[in-house]
Image (cartoon, rainbow, N blue to C red; front, side, top):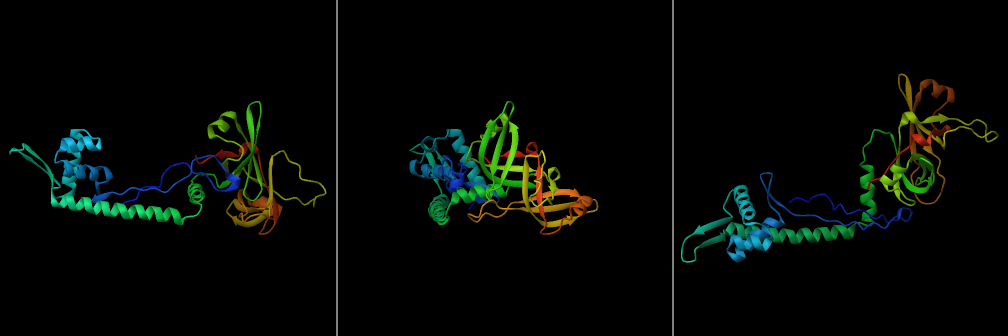
Length: 299
């Protein structure tokens, strides 16, 4: 018995921050019988066997299940070969001019399949009922399974889109309330189907992120041309021969909900780590240009 991947119907998130008008996602599956690693029969072939048993004619059975005569016999030959025993036999001559019949083994196979199919259907129904917010969970599974070379992968919701002469400015709100600004082309916005309220993710390479420390204590705000300036505190520093990997846990902009603080990783020189006196718990700011942000969707 094999269960294929879940239905690919687009998910409609139940998260109010990610509401959409997409169709709801449902759990589905199909049942196959296999022999020696090869598919012996699925619903279509079992239906063909049952039709042969009911009609006693390959021509009538093929018509009943929507197959050509040739395709039906090819399916029968494949099942006979894979089963290793005869499932369908064809007789010629005689008063009735011959016919096509099922062997007792085939009749038992049909009964077995129908019993398994009944149990499989009940399993799917129980599984669907047991999973709360299935659509939201399935969408999250898709996101966490994404693979990309960009170290920083941040999920959020499009908060605003500002049209420009050539490019558009897209503001993505993260679950913790932080905002990331991206500048992308009109074609990218349209091609990704970006719209306010739609889920999306931002990719930022670790080498594109600069770290800054504001020692002014608010007297002289940090002034820099980069649009994205996300404050946080150093989570850990991993030093290499030349460069260090610094992970920064971003400050949450909201206390509502249970969103985990976003973490951004930067690759900077060991000299910069020393000059900025970065260590675990040190307040710092992740700085990167809006043009360094790549946006994507899972649709």
